[in-house]
Structures are given as structure tokens and as C-alpha cells.
Image (cartoon, rainbow, N blue to C red):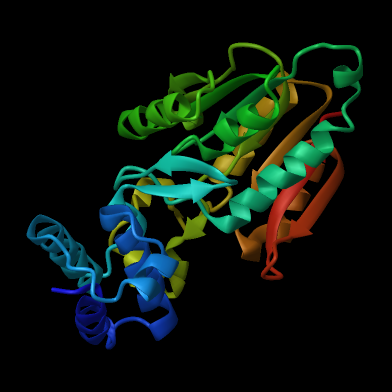
Length: 288
């Protein structure tokens, strides 16, 4: 079958599930992944014949898309902050909002006094998943000493592969942060994008996320939605250096509540920031 004919079939079979723009995006991603054909190649070579073995792979991908499986899981990778990352069903798919958090952290690092005297920064990411946050920081802060924690051994396997893929050194630690009473050392920066979606918000979650991404990394109870933030803030109070920075990615509906919690614990200069979509998404706080 030619590429042009397959594109017609592909679009027809997905038209009841996805908008056209998304179908086109899926198609070009799969062409690049399985045939190494860019969009321009497809335009210039509409009669390119798809080898049978590749056709079978494409049909399998099509069936998975019909079941609303994320394209990133189908091809096994994605891009975050300009770097390649492996993903699977044990890890959340990195989001653009988290790229904004990384950008904010890097801007704040430029202001840190410790950099001016040549001391390496000690950075900790809690709930690392794919490792996208610490790895992206490591790529941009080559002298920093960076550690990352996750409760999932399967997620950490992917994170370690991603560190190797991106040629950075990260200390990965498997532990349940809710059962952790102290950290291994003092840190200049602690970051976390922990589970924060309340059970009551499941109705807002798209099927491709709800049915495929790990609930362990997504959901918290309605009764105690700030459980991770509260615990991590307590640890940060003890183990951030003086004027050290705490960064959170947060539930957009709980921004004010998270700020108040941090104020009660004695953090200062707390800043709540919106993402590109206009939602309260990130918080920075300074240890007093």
C-alpha cells in the first residue's frame, strides 16, 4: 500500500475518535518513527510503498490508537525540553507545563549566590517518573549534583535508561516519600511534581490518560489532596539550605491552599505562577 492510500485509511478509521489535526499529527509521528519519512518526504513521495513488515506495525499502532492509547506509549518515546525520553505504562507522559517549571528553575538558578562562589548545587527531585525534570536540569547545569526519588521501581528503571540516553549522571533512589523522615543530605533546591489530581476530578481526565497512565502517579484522595505537598514541605524545611528553593507543580484548583500551607510552615517569598494555559500551576518558596 502507498503512503497516500494508507493516510486515507488511517484518517477514516480514527475520524470518529479524534479531531483531524490530531489524526494528522499521529500519522506523521508514525511515518517518522517506522519509515523515517518526514512530512516533506510524504508530500514529495505520495506513491512510496510501505513494506509489509512496517505495514503490520502501523496497523498495530492504529488499533492501539483506536483504543485511545497515547501515541507516546505506542512509539515508546517522547521529547521534553528538547531532549529524548523513553516512556512506558509505568511512567506519566511528560507535559508542557512541566517544561515551564524547568524553565523557571533554570532562571532562578542564575540568581543563586552559591553559583558565584563556585560551589556545586545539590538538587533533589521527588517523584521523578521518567526523570524528565532532573535530567533536563542536568543537561543545563553540568556541575550540579542531582538526585531523584520515586516509589516505583519500574519507573526508576525507565528514568535510569533516560539518564543514560541523555548522557547525564543522576543518583536515583527508590523510596516512599510519605514514609521518609529525613533525607540523605542538605539540598539547595528541592523540586516535586507529585500526584495531585483528586478523585472528584477524574471526570475531567481524558480517556487516553485515565485508561493508560499510572494512577499511582496521578491521583490523591479528596479528603487529603495536599498529602504529598505537606510531607515534602516538612522535609524541605529541615533539609533545604538557608534560602534554599522549593518548587512544586500543583493542582490548578488548589493554588491558594498550597500557598497557605507553605506560609504556615514558615516559608517566605512564596510565588504562585500560572502556566501558558492560564492555570495556577507552579509554586516557588524560599526556606527561611
